[in-house]
Amino acid sequence: MRPGNGYVDGRASDNSDDRHEAAEPIGSQHMTVSAETSTQQGVVLTDAAAEKAKGLLDQQGEEGLALRVQVQPGGCSGLIYQLYFDDREVDGDLVQHFNGLNVRVDRMSVPYLSGATIDFVDSIEKQGFTIDNPNAGGSCACGDSFH
Image (tube, rainbow, N blue to C red; front, top):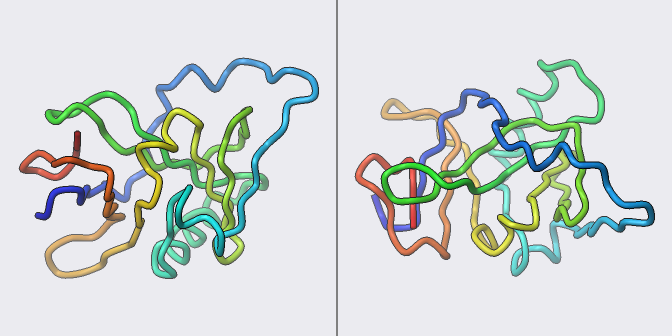
C-alpha cells in the first residue's frame, strides 16, 4: 500500500470524542464550501463513496445526519481516520456537499485531511472506504493508521 493510503472499515464506529458535546456560542458561524471549490481546503468524495454513504444514511432513516470525517490519535502510526454519521454541526466545522450528501470535518482535522480523496472500494480483496491522503507521511503495514 502506498504511503498516505488508509483503509477505513465500512462498519459504523462509535463517536468517543467528547469535544462535540459543548454548546456553541451565540452568533457562531459555520463555514460552508461547495464541492467545486473545496479541493484545496477540504476532502474530495468520489461518486462511489458518496453513493455508498448516502445508501447507508438512508438505511439509518434519520433526518439531519451527515457524514463526519475526522482524525484522532491512535493506531500504530499515531493517527487514525474516523467516518461516522453525526447529527451535530459544531463551530468551525468545514461543511461540504457531494451529490446531496453533507460531509463535516472538524476544524482540528481539516489540516490533516485537506486534499484527501475518499473512495469506496468493493472488490474481491476488500470492501470499504479508502482514503488517499497527500498529507500523510506514511502509514502502518495494515493501513489503518498514518503519520
